[in-house]
Amino acid sequence: MRRVACLCLVLTLSVAVSQAGCGSAGAPEPAPPLEEPTAVADQPTAAPDTPTPAPPTPTPFPTAEETPASTSTAVPPLQVSSDSFDHGGEIPPRHGLCPDPTNLTPAIVWSNVPPDAESLALICVDTAVDFVHWVIYNIPPSATGLPEGVPSTAELEDGTVQGPNDYGNIGYGGPCPPAGQTHTYVFTLYALDTALGLPAGADADAVGQAMEGHVLGQAELAGTYSRQ
Image (cartoon, rainbow, N blue to C red; front, side):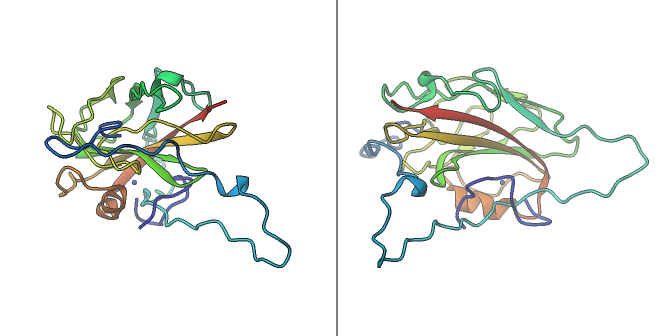
């Protein structure tokens, strides 16, 4: 199942980087590509007699079931933000993979986790090209965020695990759009009613499938990044 270009559009009743520039321990280190794919909208226009390729249609991640209106006290929705950038604002260069590969994870914070949540998951996707930059799951429900500079390891000390990004490395892989382009990166936080029965290193497709039917709530944080 492919990632969404925009994770807010997803399946009903369901819900959903890396050693940047390095592979898993003990294995040869895969070199990341120089940049992300070019967005479909920026491709050269096809000749009149040549059909223009249609952009890919990604399969949406699971989402929380909408709850009917109730007369009881409303439960505040899950919220996610960053201490590194404002929602809709520009992601600082230190969180990018180019032009300088600092590649630090941004600081992510959240609140209003549902009381019956058993785990949290976070997936970051470049919506311009459906490119996964971060897959991190089985985050303890008691956690209130992720610090800047999360290690690029498959397993963290608190039991949190990470999968590969689309550069092919475990953990976070920062933005690196083609020169002259500005892409939007969406971080979607999921509150789940279960811990995912997946080993460390599961990719975004596997995580999305495992989350189906278990999403209690979700929230999004978006940021932009450009390389001149």
